[in-house]
Length: 494
Ligand SMILES: Cc1cc2nc3c(=O)[nH]c(=O)nc-3n(C[C@H](O)[C@H](O)[C@H](O)COP(=O)(O)OP(=O)(O)OC[C@H]3O[C@@H](n4cnc5c(N)ncnc54)[C@H](O)[C@@H]3O)c2cc1C
Ligand code: FES
Ligand code: FES
Image 1 (cartoon, rainbow, N blue to C red):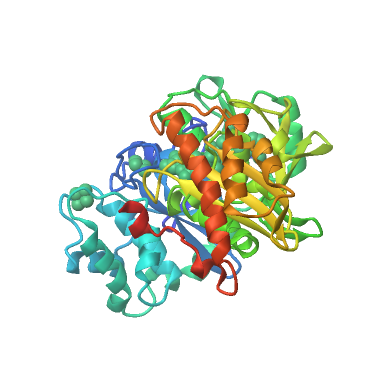
Image 2: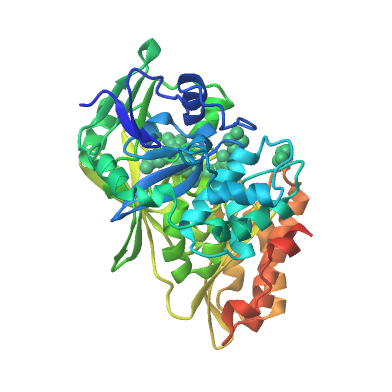
């Protein structure tokens, strides 16, 4: 066992032992390193003031991704390069092109949000060689809030940052050294950190080591991207006694093509799963683009969304409607179950002590079957769903041959609309059939009233989404998605 985490802060090696298992990267930076460039705003992943960039080896390059330091466990830096705003300027004090562009475009007033914007832009800069499209800039900055400058100048900075480059930046120049330093940190040992008050953190490097640890500590809290767990720490002020971080297990990451479909490892982040999912199910890809923000999607995982079991978890209705199967493991034993059967009640999942989610299998669409998904929230970006509807329909010769419909936000769990499906199957795919089927939603659901939406609103929206599916299916054809009434950031926020 190794009793420390090792990473690079910029180009400097760091080794931390004896830390609080729930120490966040933000607290580490401010309280241990006394680096105060990274700001604390909301402390819940919503404002972007704490945005940092994490570099991980990816073949012969480094993948730089923006993440929120406030809800990220310091332990999850193991094996990574951590970059904060203090790192960007050269040794001679010359600003990085991203910073120069912000100055030139007057992209900062009070400056509180500025380090976060700069780091989000820095990650975008590393991904692009020329001026990024406005839509890509909007996506990259959707998790950063500015209350005084306004976004116009910041978008201008994003569009012009590459013009200010005079050759490769210092990160690109130093890539070989950084990669060598990071590779020298890698090993297969389980990390075991004994923190204060007897609290402990483990970070196994293999599935078998995880299964053994969980058998020994069935009450441990598993941590994937910590975009849910992080808030238990920063907002609910929970002291977690035993934490097992899953991020070192390569076998839990990535999307594999199998005969059954896509096998998505539980630790696969939204950012890493998006392209493969969108290739099979374009609407599901759009749902993923609407989850949180880029920094959130860079760490939040599909397995975490499933295991958390929220009634408004956005991947759950599309996965259920597409007929996904969950693979669970406990000790040396695996079992599989249909995803819809995993959710037993509010906050209650069919997960036994010592069991974990290993992967989810997303089948390929059956012939002539199409998955339509709609997320309804108050804002286009960075907002939790009020209702999310997913409709998988096979229409043959104008008749509904098969229907799998699932909603989020309509019950205590994500749930199939069985009565509504029955009202559609075997019938002509007409507006009249759909309007009758909408009535069946009342048999399927008794939605809740809460601050996000009233029960009446949710019921109305759920019906409207089924009708919208029918309307949009009328324009499906050679042009596919292009002809559909997809919301854009502009229309959704209008
Ligand atoms: C600002 C913000 C915006 C958000 N926006 C959205 C949104 O738009 N849509 C949405 O659906 N969600 C949203 N979320 C919620 C969250 O991002 C998702 O639920 C995410 O998928 C959780 O994944 P994670 O990897 O961060 O899980 P974690 O927080 O690490 O874990 C979540 C739960 O799953 C358990 N767990 C994790 N992995 C496993 C495993 N392999 N086996 C068993 N148990 C496991 C953990 O113990 C914990 O109970 C948002 C959160 C924040 C902070
Ligand atoms: S402080 Fe607001 S996202 Fe981290
Ligand atoms: S410059 Fe003041 S919050 Fe953005």
